[in-house]
Image (cartoon, rainbow, N blue to C red; front, side, top):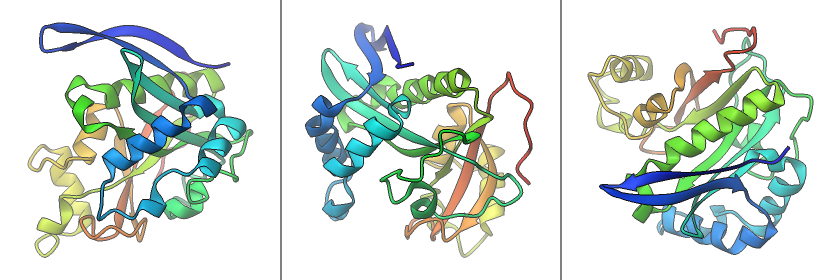
Length: 227
């Protein structure tokens, strides 16, 4: 079942029409443009979405391929796949679990919706669209009867204090409100909880190559707990 939600958000006092829906092949050019705007040089251009990846997203699991429109223009996207996740064997890299963004490992019988990427154009970031996209993906988790939404979050503020505290201490400080991390704090505001730290999750100097698995549990299902 495909997804479409129409509502309003506000730019200060001005109402703005918003549509969140599944993206399709007709959106590919705009989706690649969004990647360029969100990840400008020196970010490697070969890591932006390409047409083969996007084609896989809409053919293998279109339910997990969401975009947001503002007045008819694409403003952001959120992509996921289903995996059969074992909470007791949580370590993995982003490349391994997402097939480097190609999602050829999508498992229709999996228990977890795993977030591949979220991107919002810089000029729209004050409208709260990232949080709205994430909430829409929670609806997909419930519709598909999955146990959880999961994904690895960068911790880009960690490099500033890595000589003073371990990553576990850093995340503890973020959850207690002593430190604000641009990514982890945002994901917490979206309703996700840090549950596991993965060393070598991705190549990211700011995060010192760590990633934090951030979970939202389907409230209508019994589930295991990541330990």
